[in-house]
Length: 300
Image (cartoon, rainbow, N blue to C red; front, side, top):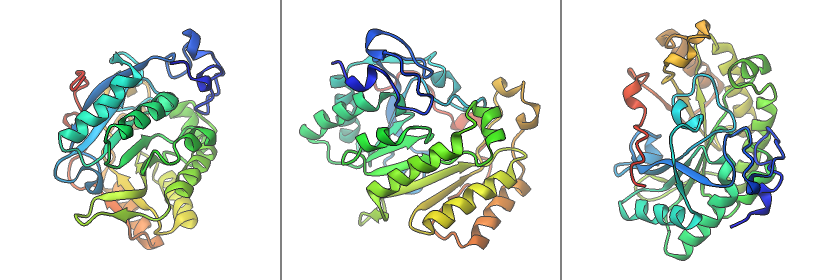
């Protein structure tokens, strides 16, 4: 299926404007074909997403941001993945629902949004009736989020940086904050206040994640302050300590370590002082490679 949005692709803020329909690859590393690295139940998301049965995660290959420290580095650079059709993608969604997934969780989906929309429409026609989670780095254009209106129930969005010098160094995206702020605002406009079912699982709403990086506590505070001033407790916050220094950050010595307990506590305490009530924090040693899924094409 040829999708016009891929003729001059501007789904993400890289704005490559390449013709992915004719086999040209953008910054994300992919043309119009869909590649998936894993489709399986996943227990390691926020409690209101994973629950007891797991979130039905679909990990897409490629990425429009490619942070230097990415824990999913192998799929971000496109070295792992199996090609699937739009029809097969819709079938994967239904398969995950049949396995008991609380929701369908689209991980790193930005560069596949037109194809995902078609797959979701097919799956919904065939009985998909659980919430759809859009799990994103938030580096996408507003019109991309607009395409998802009515198809996505929960946005699980990153707000990675505030300072452009930090986003430039680690994600080659000096404009990250401005782009992400607009994208998150568009997400909130679609889903509004959080809603939960009788078992406490989220049915609708916005969760914004922030991963605390080594030496970047002041930037983390700026991110949380911005979000709280913009949304208060109408959204959920997820402050993460799971930064894992993998071998590909050796060239960035300042982040080639785990964050300290003191760094993480400083950010969490700041959020509490601001008035954040709807939040998730991580306790214990979550910065382990064992928390990174095996991208072995499970479920494909």
